[in-house]
Image (cartoon, rainbow, N blue to C red; front, side):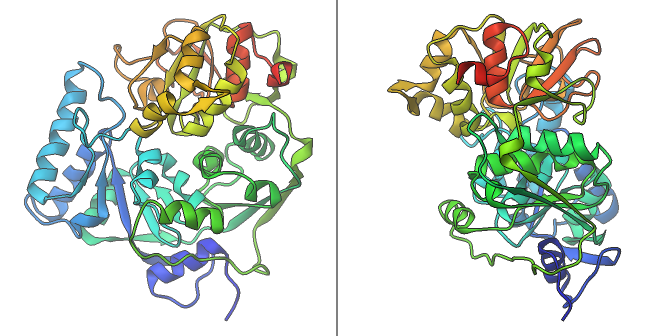
Length: 433
């Protein structure tokens, strides 16, 4: 049998085929369908239109619904969206619904999904959100789809896909402590552009990737879509298996690619050559070393989102802010309720993380959600106003992305964001390390 990449092997198994190749159109069975309050109502509408208003979903146990985007708001349309989800969940008896305002609530879907054991190596995950590719960090094929496709999956449990080619990104050596996963993926996107991996699988490997914890691997796969990728993926290892096994008793079978499989392209770098960076407005590909942008004055710092609101992200930020004070408004948004609790219990040099942030002057902490990462209604926590210049750990810096169309967003790692919050200008974190 001809060799295949990990992405090809996962898709072949999900299609019941022994052999597939890039460009093949195949029917792929879904293991998980994820949706949330932004796209859920539209997905439900398509499903009911095509399968019947009261038709049963294909498998209620494989659908996960997590409201997380516009939930802490008085906006009527946003609240209506959540009401639609609640009614559908009741009718379909969907067990995996993490409702806002209840003890079941968990936070941002891309971090909550693996936390709750819904992400397993070798499986296929479809989600109505472009950053569903986050879950490739666990050795799964995970990709974002539109409401129409999701409505079909909701009823049929499968989707017609074209097999993507694989672009391989190998990071050798040992990552310096001042370089975070965000710096790695911003460097890659800066090199290849926002269209450098259009409809391709971005496969990340190498000693430096192997050395990353799961939070950091999620950051890298999360932003694969910012290069146009169909999915991002990292082959599962012992760290992956241990992480997943601690969160689910469901059986799973890890898949690994064949080493001699033909691929579309190869990008290789030595981790020791990387440095802290930012992505300048208004594209994630606008790479610049942080040290080269020290003249950029800032109005606020924002640490949060599925990309930058995980526990590891807050530990990094706290390591910089410990014993120091911020000079600008600094907004903190834990990705999930688990992370929010950990801010109280996780310590650094004997001090709880939240205590470090409060002492540093970061007095604005939101309940776990997407908050201002996608702009949101006017009462959304952290939403930009006017011509603000912001350094943010989020994943996109498009015009209007965080609210105001006049705001300028610089993407950065939690280390760089925290260092910049102290000085009020873009700052290489090595100044404080």
